[in-house]
Image (cartoon, rainbow, N blue to C red; front, side):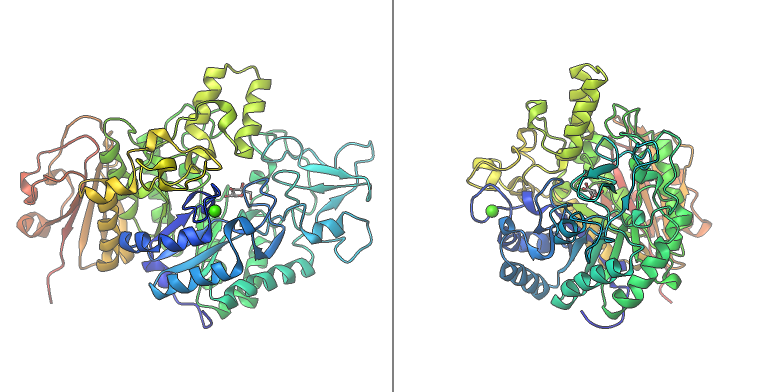
Length: 573
Ligand code: GLC
Ligand code: CA
């Protein structure tokens, strides 16, 4: 929408859709725009008010759409521009906004800009990408590794030069130093904004500005730690974003969320402090790294609760001036229930608990499709069934390192991005889970067959209705939006508890990570004297179990993964 930016996104809950896997409408095994349109009612019934669509543009799909060949055209496998317009119009009619993925650190090597750029050293696009000569001794321009393995440089004989790609070699990095590149990107952004899209999620936006010296790194950043991580937050990134804001974003009432790997809270403030006019919020990764092992996300570790508390609280405290995005899942992450909860006996309880923990915090919550059902990591029948480029590269790397196959299977099961990318389970009794009547592009997950929308909607005690309540509370309780955050019971080994208060209401969020029953009573919390004398005014807003006593004084324990939200309402003036 045209007009100056407002902060509607502070009240929003975003639902992320991976279009390839959400709903297939024409039965070719691939999710599509009309499929999404046919499921808007579902998203509406959940209560989410904003959709983030992963890339739907023309792409050779080397990295599933994060390699874009034409920023202004819809990939025909997802439908047509008319289908997109219809989706946007219907979503808007329901009060649901749509934000798009903006992938402009790199393009596809099939983009016209790159095809021209690589053809010679002298053409209108020759400076659109990052081209370097070999070093004097004939070796690569520097020792940076690409995220998906191998060097970050690929040689092109026509130019007798190398181009930089922080990701796959089919994803050449744009040269943001070139003002013509920036203007071209801004034009593409305006194209979508003028259509009425409601903002952008900006892919690896912290990486767009490179150190002009292109220094060799200390050798740590190869393969599993690509240099792009080290190259995050380069010297001109804020200048570029301020320019983008001034020239484009400030003219529209839209939201922006930047994906910013390797970003600290200090840097996050630079991106999100409203005074600086850059982005509204960022996706940080620190809590995603707490369980990393020697192969990064391909790990057998679990994030210790103490680390989770420390880290998530740090982001709450340090971003008071900016704004947080809150997430457990996305298309690059395994399922949170499998990762941080219990995907067996206490799947439902732990999924609810993780949802409560996140949605109680300050910031804008993101739900990745299927999270609201409590979906778990699928079991891929064989390593050959993984399709994701990152997973495939890691399987090769781990085999080269002679890691046992059983280890490789385990870390792929825990960490592969394909965990999140299997088709949505609408109805486990239908062929292909109601996603398509054709065999899907990635196998359906047997492990999730019963964790379906159909079953979820029938049972008020399942995860879906819990998420619905969490979203509804966010829409009605100002303290959830504005209240300051304080971590409580800091040293408790099994409980993650915090309070939010806005001077009127006080909300306590209590989450157990224990898989057994543990003692707990409201008196364990550092209540104010007024709260202590008003215990009978406290309201149990939400619990992960259907039979938690409404009178909070009767709560003497927390059952496995139980979570509570307790409100002490402010005194009416
Ligand atoms: C982001 C995307 C990921 C993609 C990468 C390169 O991290 O979320 O899916 O592979 O950027 O574009
Ligand atoms: Ca289709």
